[in-house]
Length: 195
Image 1 (cartoon, rainbow, N blue to C red):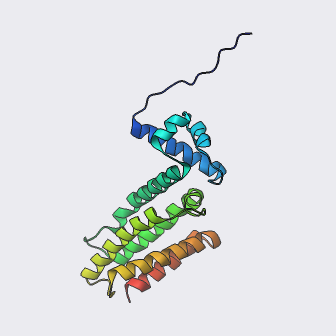
Image 2: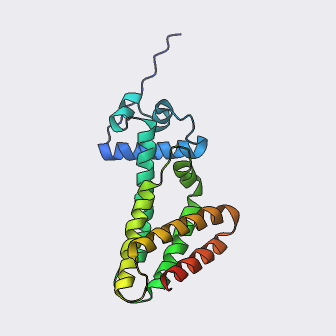
Image 3: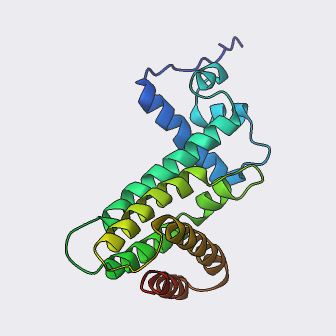
């Protein structure tokens, strides 16, 4: 019997679409097997592209996981940013409560991916922390200027809020219910800002 060698059907995609499809495939793979021992070959196979194609977009597995962390941070920030809009009417503390509730729910819903991207040995939370620092800093400064947040320093208050929220969410989402986690985070944030 004369078997023909299998050839891969080439599909031309715009570069941004190809890059996104590679990241989508890498996400699915990471959720299935984790990041330990992950290779470019694994990701290329999952994405249905040749290794050479993969290297046109990313130079390493670390480059892919870094891009995934950035994409995760951008998506989460985009979802949450409107909740901390500056100015306007209405209680800033209520807006912060909503922000905390939605943030907690979003991280809970994406817990496996969040854990895979941000808790392995080489991971840093820089894109996520940096994005939230900007959002919270702007929000705290706006509340301070409006006289609603009597805090002495916006930067230090923001740093404290970030550290506190991170600690409560990290522990709470692993150890207790989402509702309890939200309630504790909201209470601590309110105490920090309404001293």
